[in-house]
Image (cartoon, rainbow, N blue to C red; front, side, top):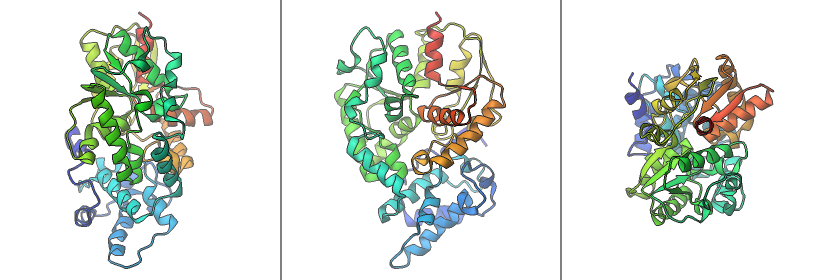
Length: 402
């Protein structure tokens, strides 16, 4: 199967809302073959923890839709949310079920009925109130800049043709802030005319969409769209694949209008800078492996750009994971699972660490702050010596060698 055909299953279709007839047709083609069960990261010893089981649960939704006073147990609800939204189940689906779009629709339906796990209800409340994931004052969103030396005050720069949309994870979590610090230094050294929105940047809305709360995510989307327009942005660059996917494939549907921006992930932008000879990198004698983030790889189709960047660094040896590209295993951080079931998320991340260690590479590189966070948490918990880095950190380190 071609990568293009695989990608078609994960790029949102025109029918993204939970439509009973549309999803009944989607579910009807599932023959319960079980191929998806072999690769699901959340699979435990029960059928209900697999895509096959969740489809059975979803079919039950339709039966209950016909019954008055429909109710769902906590276990029922948790099973439907016990998913990283990684999309791996769709890669080998012989009946071409658009699984990820379906799971988003199911969660939206559950949210409309008021059946959302308590931990995700709390997450939604935090994001709606604070406009970020961590319940901190949003004007602290650019505090990570205090450790970056630039020849100008980036926070006071109000307009620019390129705006770096940082995202919540790289803005607020200390272990992932090096992603943001590295990227702004790359942009500065490459001579890019750019800025950031700072405290006027709000959460992209992706965590709320994944929780099923589309209406609340719309308010965040509208705010960010207006801010980008006011800042004169022509290009929006993102280091977070979740933010990238929302800007690239979801925003126009949510607000029902086309936005005027060129949306690029950092790996796309850095690749362009390399091709334009605006970036020069020194040698790094190191063996690394690369983890494809689910929302950047399987769910957005960006596989070549990160590898192109790594291949351009002199002395760097890339050792591929056994499961890579569209077959790459999930790190456990997606689908709001770190918020709803951290124990399961870190178990998945632990399996990812074991696969990484099998390559004998000393460093795992990825292109997602959330992946950096999950893998770092797992390797720290298991007391494993492994360097975990976003690709922006590796590029900046190589640029600093010149």
